[in-house]
Length: 296
Image (cartoon, rainbow, N blue to C red; front, side, top):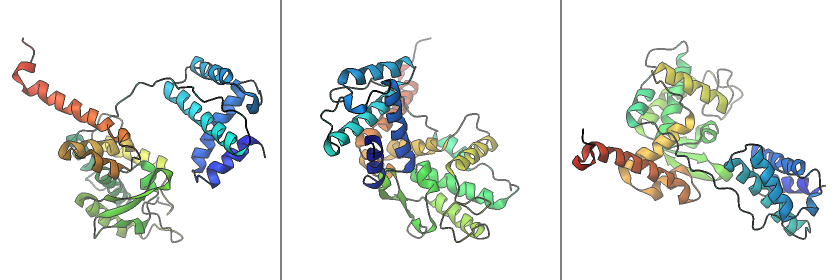
């Protein structure tokens, strides 16, 4: 087995990364082989890796993409030195280009209300209407990632206690709260789900064919729902997660609690929402403080 295949097998079997993530590592390592003109990976030097980074930047890749490639290469070489007998890690000491931090787009509480209260008239299929409302209420109520929502099974949600167990990144599980409006919407969806279910599927959210709903289907349904609600902007599922985090932080100022609910491994990831909260406070200040107003 060649070194790359050994590493990919390690990622899948020992680190238990998802097939999607393993495929991303495979693409990054194939890109390295291409950039170094098929020079054996065992012979690469720091200069070779630095040259590969320069070539990536010349291809107009973003700093984030370049950093991801370097991270994949560094992980491979760390494994190869530890397990495969490689003499040196040519990625040691190399730093990725700094990426500009972009704040996530966040829907205001009023926009969230407009979105979630939309589609109040009966649709062509009441079951789909009930399902979509339950999905979007749960997104906003619990701050779920898209993959976490589509991965939910029936026994993951307890409407009596108002809790759900979700499986996040790295297959780590956590308990999240399920708010009252989400519980009401889920209670309305569950009876509608029964006639659609096929082959005893455990999935909480299913398609008309009775199979687990895909991430792409959820994205399309949310876009449709947003248009029906009269929103003149593109809305994607992660925006509801961002809205959950920002609105909870604005109300409670409890960064650690938000970190736990979002399933962030590091609080530094959660801290981006403190910047959003500061933007909100600064706007209020500019509107309300007498000395902040520009003289006309």
